Image (spheres, rainbow, N blue to C red):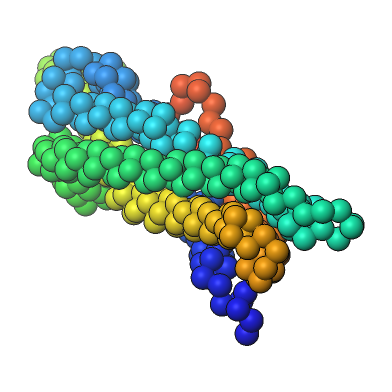
Amino acid sequence: MTNEQNDPSVKNLEAALKDLQSYLNGDNDPLNTLKGNWIFLQIFATYGLRLPNTAASLESVLNLTASEAAGYPWFNAMYSAYNTLNEDSTYFFNDVFDKMTTLGSGLKSYASDVAGQDSVFTLISSLIKPTDGTDPDPASALDILKDLTGTSQKNATLAAQIKTNLGTYKTKLISAQATLGSVKKNVDADDKTSQATITKLSGGPEVMGSLKQLNNLLDADNEEYKHDVIVASTTVTYAWVAPPVGLIAAATVAGVYGKKAVDMLDTIDKLQGQIANAKKELQTAVATQNTVKLAEGGLDNVIKYTDLAIDKATSIQNSWSSMVTGLTSISDRISNSIKNEPDGEKKLAATIAVVYFMKKAQESWTSIKPTIDTMVDNPYITVSPTDKDLKTFAEEVVKEANELEHA
């Protein structure tokens, strides 16, 4: 192995870019790719912006009037928690995601400049060791290296800022997770919205108080009511068979069954009201549980993906820092060879080292460029801003994410 191959700047560069490629493509696991990571974080943040974060919007989602909502002890805490998630999601888009897309664009732009046969690295090599008979131009090479180093440092700084902001975002999410957990406990403890209530109301006809059991009662009462009405209304006709005793008996029968019919109608009316209330209670309980479970489950996952995003930002920062170190080392070699040994062995050694570094850097960036293009192109999800229920919204987001992931 030659001295150039053992050069620390070359080895560090190759290792950094190899790690970067691994983090970008997630070892071919779609959920761990850079794009997959960005998409998932967007999904939750977009969902966070759509959660009902005011009293009016939560009343609408849960199909409650203001007076009905006042009867739920967790109601105010729920929309307050959702409002916190809304604010956290706004922070993500303004202070994290915008910077992430800028970093991605910078990564792609840099790769376009330094990858391929006609790259900036090829130009630097030709300035240090011309092949067309012209004189070397190390000063121009140093100017280009200075620009590349500055761009690399700028991207490293941006990656560090993203990492810091992701840490802040994670802290916000953990705080929201605790608040939402408290809301979930109160929802579960409320007889009107507990899972036990949902289980009872949605149970079979054998479950006392279930909608099916109440509907069976209603059917039976309706049949009895019809029978009593028929008896009460037809008794007078039958009475003419044997007057006057039959008339007296028939009148009694008609009175008894007429009273039973009226009483049964009252029972049916009350039962219908009970069923209507049970349906509304079940609807509200299910909507409440679904909304809070979606938010709670989403928080658990987004914290995991935020940790992954922090790892990726760290990897990208380290890669850019390695580029800065490598380019600075090469620049120093060129500068030292010009100042100290303009015509000696150090100049020759520096020339060989620079050309080799440029060759390996070009090969590495050329190899990684397709991955960068795939991971960075079109990182956005697009969801219509029109109002829709949360289920429809979630389905639309998932469809959009799947299309992007498999693009």
